[in-house]
Length: 516
Image (cartoon, rainbow, N blue to C red; front, side, top):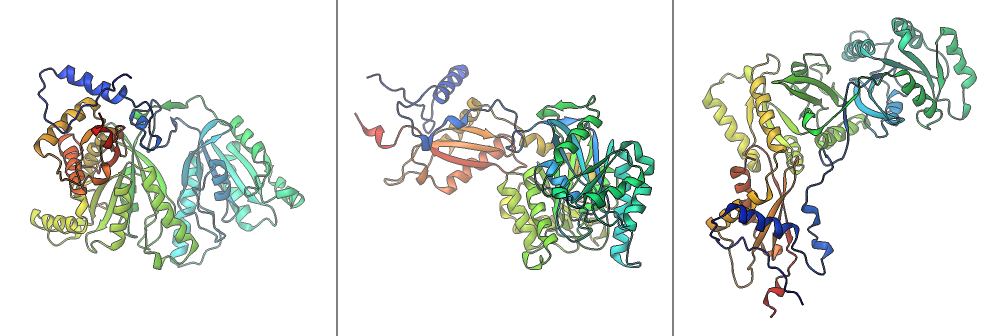
């Protein structure tokens, strides 16, 4: 029987005279040294780098130059339902309450194999309670919807089968300047229901009229075919991972300035800004450039305590804000300098930390503080570090989103953080560093809890994750894992982001070492 090769023992100091010799040894130990009977539970095959480009753990393609398709219409005609069906996932909030969608909701939809940039706009409301906050918000929704329609390549005007309302007629008249890029679609005609009534829309002179059911899927295929025929895909270009924008999620309690910061960054009124808490309900995406880097910003609905979430709409918004953490690279946790931190801030931070996202604490409305010197900032920083003990590495930026003070510092930190999120350490170099850490601080040992750290590898980027192989992972103290984690962060260039550690048993069982 051929004698098995022994894996290198990084727990013992080893004199190295030739760096290339060590690199070859490490490479052989990781890639070639296998057991005759591998243990599937402790399989190490997942440590190799995937050739498939991945982003946030999900394989996907990214594009630029996409045709812009905008869904428009009065409230509650089914725009969000159609949006979700075309996107093949639930992004827009669907609720029987009219006016749920306020800000445009955007995403890349694959329609018959072709990518388009799809936008769900807020509903056009003609009837308003004059003098109320809702009326002011409705005016803003209409303004925002018309802006998106003007930019669109294709406008899908969604109508409802049944009686034609004054809002329908008024909105159709506003669509006259965009007639050449308009596709009229009558919704809620499942099974042929109300088709005879739906033909009444023909009197407006639409060039195209489709009858569909967004909820049941009737005639969606025909609509998709027409959309692809009408769109110009000549400028569409697939982009690689290195060209991907830095994706930022702006999260925090309601009314902390999230929408104001979004508008400041994008130089557009992408989000409706109001002193009325809870104005933003859907996630809003915008784009901008800084220092020749592309950014995407996601402005989320404010996260409230569950006890205060009474409406279905608020429930969906809270979940949407949480799911946004899975889509972003970096989190801007907005904190009102006048109000301070809350338990919900701690919850958001914990969720972002668990997902390995870069986190920046943004002390907004800093310009309103009576004391703004270094001493006042140091005091506030100490206070945050006490509240977030495990997040001492996270940058803290004083900011005035309204005046733009501190924005450059914020974005500079985001760029540095993004570089760390996608930084990959060579396995040989990583284990050379591990050897040094083990020599300086050897693993604790006792008669009952003796273990050896074999080697480690970087499992993934964004989130940054490392995999350690040890002889008895179950007895490795948490304190020693913390020591290794701190060394990785401080010595290998991950000082601004969280790093995740996983430990597995090496293929050679501990008891097998005593045989022979």
